[in-house]
Image (cartoon, rainbow, N blue to C red; front, top):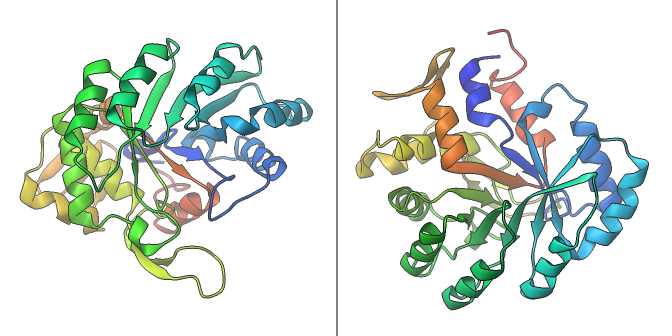
Length: 290
């Protein structure tokens, strides 16, 4: 495998099998995550995304499955005070709570949350894409926490258009604010796909996670101008090689890719792990000799 592919995609998929469109049961999602850890492309697998309301059931079920450590990203509710107490008193050596994810909150409420956050856990606050982002970016960047952006959903309106998404990424870059994405990123490259696997599911234009990750790196390292940003989200013309990734006249080294993933684009949540993997195989970006 090319080093550039691994640098761009290591640990990038946070597994969200409990969420639409998959909507698996908790035992099914747990079994899948454990299985994915045994597969050759487990280097792409990130955290298990779990609503905190299911934490008790989760702890009971994993006792039957052998995994060195369950890396969790907990989805908190609007009742975040109670949720944070549950996190504080969680004592299970089999679990590692790597991150917390908050729903969209009012900016003034985020200030209250920040005072109560446990130390040492990466925290993501979802920001609304269709409202004024500046107050959200200001409070999050000031306090060193991360943003979460929604890149899809269960209807066509949930998928931001390329211009809107580009503007959001540029704003995150300007604020030097790390982020993760969620929903609608099952495929490496942009294209028209069914929203779900149900009969008569609507078809919409989806963003590609390769495009998002590469664009994030270009923005973070200031290698792109505004007029080029939308083009990166819509292209499939990337060149991967052992030393890095090229797009047009822009080059990203292995180190630059690793730094961008570490400091800027952290991961994306997907209810499928196999779908992104199989698409990458079709593109011959993984499971091929270097």
